[in-house]
Image (cartoon, rainbow, N blue to C red):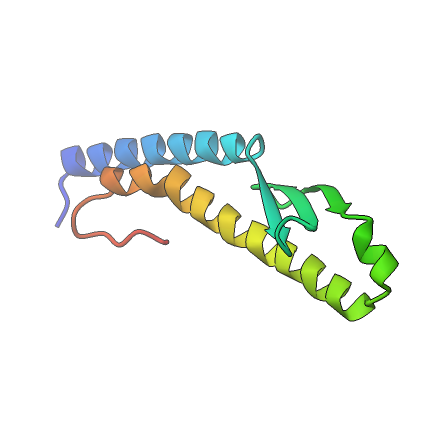
Length: 108
């Protein structure tokens, strides 16, 4: 099955991957995305660790008095931001795939 040399090498590679994963997860805390909806009438700023930092709503939306539209735009802005976070996480973690042995699946 495995000899001791192969097992030690595998464990060393796993430790290297774990260290790199921790580093990349830490980097995500410093990456923000801005989700928008309604051509920028609603903007939300969220970190890639899902910390909401800012919500900006154009004042013109309040004068219209259409609460349903405002709610839809807020939801859309958050969904847009979450999609961007997923993409950034994939980009940030993607190079870890090259560290995996050829026959081992990557979790994302």
